Length: 543
Length: 80
Image 1 (cartoon, rainbow over the protein chains, first blue to last red):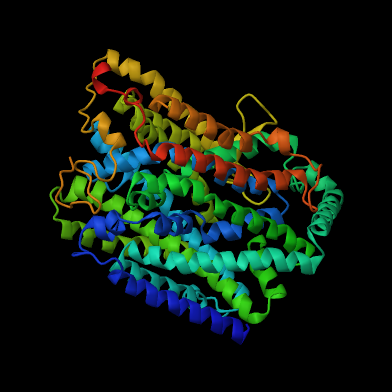
Image 2 (tube, rainbow over the protein chains, first blue to last red; image 1 turned 120 degrees about the horizontal axis):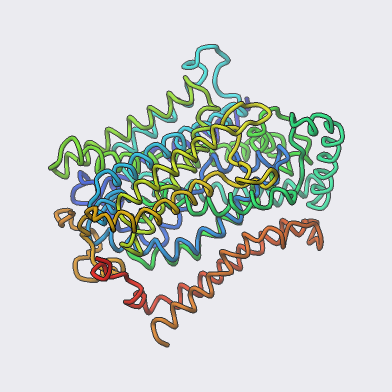
């Protein structure tokens, strides 16, 4: 533990804490006690704020820890994060402005609100909401895992068998986060995202210029890594042949090409089904904010790619850690002067706070709108809705904390893996619904159920050298022994097939279709149009 | 330029940004290297600004015309 590093870290942490509480006064609203204000920041963020907020939202601390960790561990497939974050923006460009428009016209706060309005189907809306909450919870837990890794490398926290004593710093950090999220809502992470991203850009740019130069240049790094992987493969040739170890490579082998692109595509399609991404998008002021951001957000992808390569840099720099997730923090510890290492640690930890806050708000919005309002209190006042969401945001974070501290970390990682598979199953209902009302609501429900069940079952059956179940995101393509693909894509394919096949069957059987609350023009409405106000009128009709 | 022509151009612009990164077979190799980076890595880095430029052009094109042509909206009445 280094006093200077810890001092810088604590200073920056206190700075964002002050910002978090002060955020309640930022872009001040008449009344923070509505879901549009607390849960969507007033729906008035412009391009600049949105860039930081959405960037801070989807490039999480766990990404920053886990992606370089896979490269450090010798799996070049982990670099799929880069094509994934390239492919995602054209997709956003096309369909999210439609979701924005229809949500603004009808006052939808969550994707499940839209599904309910479009299909008049409470079961389908509940399915979408529960999937969102289920997929988000482990994601929040993983932000904690990211923080925990950094705190361990810093040497903060007492060695103790008692999980509470050992992780007290984590506990404090999360309690502070919970407090300002409660009081400021989405404004807190939006404001803190400025600090987070400034620090992250600074740290990564310095890291990718300074450290490789120090270690002998990129050519040398790739050579060293290649040699180290070749040595590993020849030393462990027997274990690899027996399937007890995985060969290392700096590039995905031919057999994993399909794995690489299906991971990229599946993750890209899933990303904007996550409630926290949709929350970020719905908080923007107009359609063009979303489109402009689709062309500006790739700057983060560049950053992510560079960061991923730090996993290789760590190998070349001689970093030896048993937990690959510690590779990058350890690299910072070894290579940076203490004060800058403190900045780097703070960047990662604050990088965990922003998405954790947004995710808990998004989960709270889903709960409030699609469970509480649908089943518990059908005619809540705006103040009741906001209060419900605030309390639930606390519960969600507390749940994630207990999850990571008292249960197993691996369990959280497994669930996160499943979360990606699950959330993709809401795509046909949401994105399909943005373009067409052709799908029958019960066909979509059946497709969702089939995709969820098969995806979970496939993931359960994946063995790895260390785990009997949930060992990874890939399975063999049906009727193939060698071609591996991403489970989410397979489950998604089944989902779509079921929905397409059942739709004409249900129509032929005259199963009621439900009443669509939306009109075609709702999907293209923009700021300034009739019924679309810059700051949404909370009294506006919803259903 | 009519609205539907404009939207066709947008789709044509965005297509390579989605398709190219997924064609792993064309870039999963070492050579040619650039500043010590294997082709696999620098090519994917190169795709980021390429995709950003394509998306920016698409954004500029749609700015004056936020509405896609009406026939892209699926009127519910025709289904029922």
